[in-house]
Length: 521
Image 1 (tube, rainbow, N blue to C red):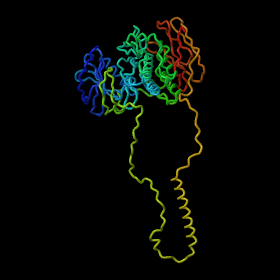
Image 2: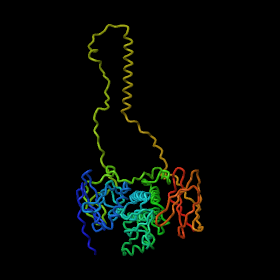
Image 3: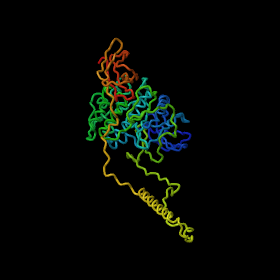
Image 4: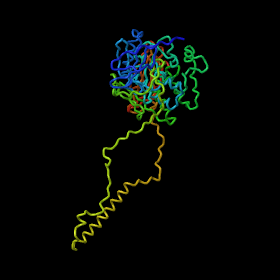
């Protein structure tokens, strides 16, 4: 058994006081520091001295990627980056005190409701990264931390690459990797992240990685063989509906073209399972750097919330709060931030804050005076005059007014009687609204060095347009918007070309997933 390396000594960082070690990995150590101003606890990831020459550029790229994306609520916030006095690069990150998802699922499987919620929130973070041109390529339970407020936060973009480039893979996590990751040629693409999302949610439900078989050998060679050839094993839980397993099976299809074309399509499929189970539907939060008129708008009644992405370092006062009191135990699962002894209940209720009123007599009701002023009472009796009938009439009128006022005050103080009839109960509504249909009759033919595709709009409406992507293992190319029901695509030396076509309504609504058309079909 290989001896575990000792952690490197923590660096001296101006404005930060070292507290303790959080974890160690193959490339870096992670420490807990106390920041002096503003005062808070932060996690500091420090590159190992022996890794500086070969990984400094990659470390810098990770800092830039996470800073660009970390304003998303499901991505760990990066506060700052720098180089210590002894020459080691470091990242100052949000401190997530709760156990990460790897620790959680090993303790006990997740409920279906929590697995769906986490899956949608993390898928939204992945879709945000994809729209910014970044592939994560290492999504797994250990890379999903949990904030103080019990929200998942994706981290470790250390082997991320751009969707436009062909960066070499510097590492992989075999249990959650798709079959194409083991090919000799380096491959990458958005559908690899979709596969890893599905594998992660499967793991949370099953309590083990998808192709880990209890009682059998589960080494790297065995796992790779099963990932490449074995159908997805069933989840042995009666409360996992067949519809959810079908969603996971599609996300983890052996053929990348058979998977969901995007992380947001996978998230919407999970939303539909929530609707089927009568759960609260988790919104999809997406940051998008495209102009408002470039691409379809996600307009589905508030279930997909698209916001502009920022490419500058986040303002520290705008980040999520960090924990300041949790006791943290050292970890050994690859430098993930973890905490022991922290209560991980799904919902935390805190008492309301009581604000005392400045004046405790803001509204005072006082009865009308029942006796005349002393001066009037002491006045001598006047002789009868011809005005006394008017005085009596005025007295009677005053008594009547006082009676009406008293009755009105009593009505205000008394509660209104409850209605005897119950309000009508509305039928359940589908918050996703009417779905935009998929295009049909897709056909693709090869003509010389190009492929020609056409399709049919089953329910045409005024203002309909189409969005298409070229489906490729090394990353989807596009998107491109067109008005016609046909498109010509160069073969670029390939024997077979596939595209994904989305129908886009005039109001911005689009199909949940694309229709895949290949040439030759």
